[in-house]
Image 1 (cartoon, one colour):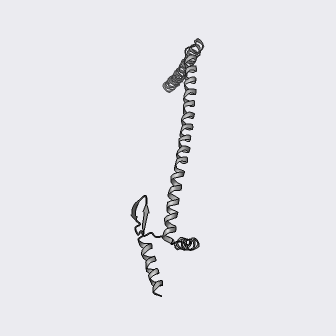
Image 2 (cartoon, rainbow, N blue to C red; image 1 turned 180 degrees about the vertical axis):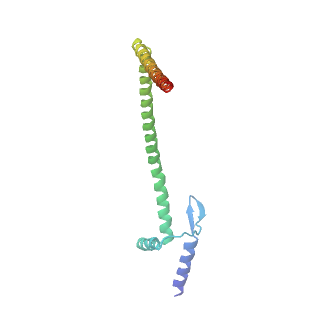
Length: 157
């Protein structure tokens, strides 16, 4: 009975503060409190009992495993991101070169005599259109003047 009480007290003390040798140094595990869902606590308890270790040891192992796994996964993710960035840069460079080629073609087209002729023709058509608009406006004004004159003449007679 006394042995059992000593074991229980020792277990409680070891769970709260235990000493671990790592790399020839003594380090102390500190008591840390976390709020966890009851389902998770129950699952941890079942697994710890199944593995024959304390819940503290199980949580320690799982956290350590999770952190090392994350560090191992970080490199492939970084590589994947770098590859995606490199692909985007290559795509943008290709589009840039394509636009440069199109610009050169357009510049060569602008300097051709055919382009000059087409532009001159477009300008002349634009001028013709403006002249037609002006002529239409003048004709309407003349019609209004004639109507006004006719009204004036008919009112005088």
